[in-house]
Image 1 (tube, helix red, strand yellow):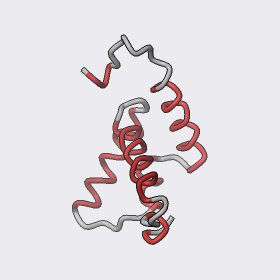
Image 2 (tube, rainbow, N blue to C red; image 1 turned 90 degrees about the vertical axis):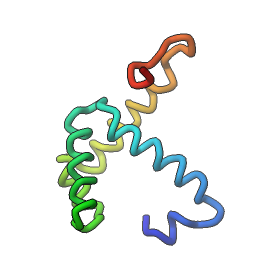
Image 3 (cartoon, one colour; image 1 turned 90 degrees about the horizontal axis):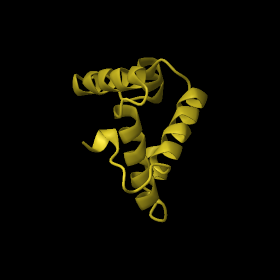
Image 4 (cartoon, rainbow, N blue to C red; image 1 turned 135 degrees about the vertical axis):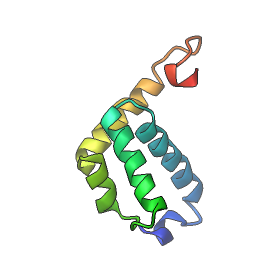
Length: 91
């Protein structure tokens, strides 16, 4: 979605919440290749490279379908851990 769609007044809170889950997934180490690719993408953006979806996918070495299926698997695991157990990334 473009910037205007993302900032739609009726959905902006949802979009920010979902975005935070995407960032957490990409940086979690659930898939080490995604973690390294995401860091590389952020380093490139910080050094002036364009912020584009194509560049993100190139850095992650995946496509939207693969990224989405991994994200759903990761999200599913986030909510299956019993509350009394400490998740590894929380330590």
